[in-house]
Image (tube, rainbow, N blue to C red; front, top):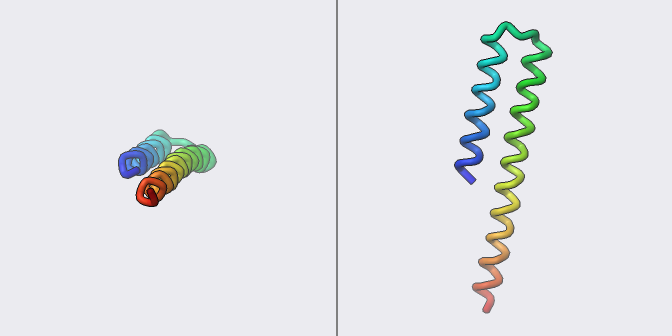
Length: 64
C-alpha cells in the first residue's frame, strides 16, 4: 500500500513540475494535475481493495 501511494505522490509531483516548468497554459497544468490525481486515486482504490480482501481472509482464518 505504501509503495503505491508513494509512487502516485512522486508521479503527481513530477507531472506538476513538468507542466509548470514547461511553460504550459493553466488549463494544461490543470489537466495534467487531474490525470495525476486520477492515477493516485486509482492506486489508493487498489490498495484499499487489497487491504479489505486481506482483512476478510485473516478473519476467516482466525475464525476456524
